[in-house]
Image (cartoon, rainbow, N blue to C red):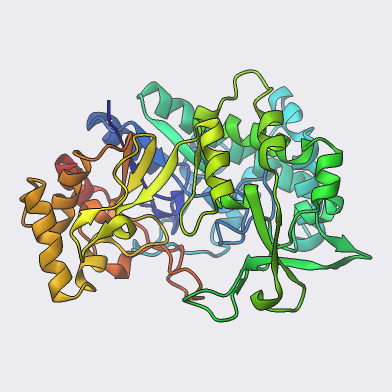
Length: 439
């Protein structure tokens, strides 16, 4: 039976304090999904990341902006918090810091805290933050404990409402990170210097390829330790979420590395984690290929496709890329083990995509929808109707597409450094509650 989901990052939730968080608005969103029979809520990565979700500084620590001040008030850790003006952009600033420090001064340690704070990876993050930003180590341990506690309470509530969370796991950390500080042997580093940078080869969009401000993995050392460094990461992430979207899946087969300081023209592909890693991961009780959804978009090697099929991983499809509007058909509608989107966080909104089509392609899209008995005058609703007819197992829409918003509301424009990236948010749920009934 086909299942449905909604993609909405945590930072995009409505908020009285400038940025979406793990507070009551997240609970209200879950209620809306539950009431409308929506099974999945897909979020972007929630790791500590300095605003860039796919560039984490830790694969264990969570982003401090997501602490709910309302829940701190309820817990008696702060007295009150001043509300901010409501906007459609997340604010990344230090507004919440004074409330965090007030909460820390009122916090009493207990056994649950001590157990959480004893985790090696959380201690490493606290040490890293303390050296970088100057507060006591204990302060960062406290923040991470609050984050973990609030998140797990939210996830428990979602599951009780029959809503399941699809998390998101980036492939690389950034250069300056907990990972490279404490686990440098697992990255290509010699005498304290990076020898390679992650990126892509030259393509249609970029003659020099891309450089990602991220280190690449030292596969020799990772294999020597039987993939434990990566396996542990996955095991922890799977505690946080019900299913896990694996970003840049083709990197698990082979990743591209560029000699440090050079361009993508000078790079090469090298073997990734491959079968050895996944075999090691699935030895653990309770972890199966069904827990993972792999992002296999773009140009995929035959070897990558064989790796995916070997484990039966659910793959992804984006309708904006799979529709051939010259010949008016869906070139990727022959596989059921698929999570399908009209567009994801890196894409135009449906309406933005439609507006940028040529007149001929707009007419062809309308004909395609009519041929598939999808008749609504609104292009986003017509596309939703088409999805109900696709073979995909799970269909996921962004909130922007449900609302019929244009590209001023897109989440990210890849490869372009602009303040609008990773900042769009809802002001409230009123329009969403009305429009989701079409989904």
